[in-house]
Length: 125
Image (cartoon, rainbow, N blue to C red; front, side, top):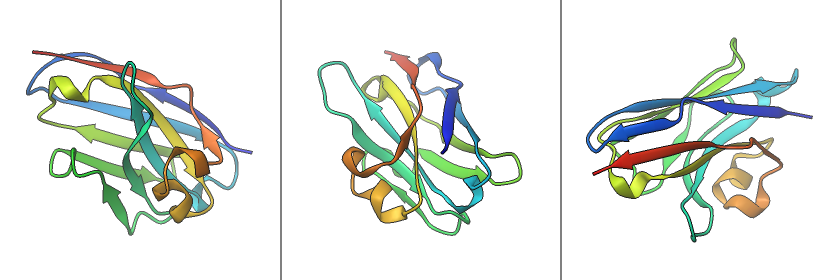
């Protein structure tokens, strides 16, 4: 069992930066692939980024590539999402996700085993 708690959301102006954190509990965190998804009002939850269990592989949605960076600290049981050059269209609730399989995280929200409750990011224009 893995429990995930996100933090770091907030209000920021366009062009600004935020760093989201996801603290995980559970002895097997280091063996899990992790990801970030987001859901804007009235829209479906969408993939943002993923990282493999050892941090060796990362993937990004085209919409955030070059602006967001995902990282994983197995010693601290934490995954991060550094978000730079934020745009109003990045406004959403951001959810942390975990699964034993990287392909499950990459396949979209329906295949993920564990979710956090989300943290709200609002980008003003």
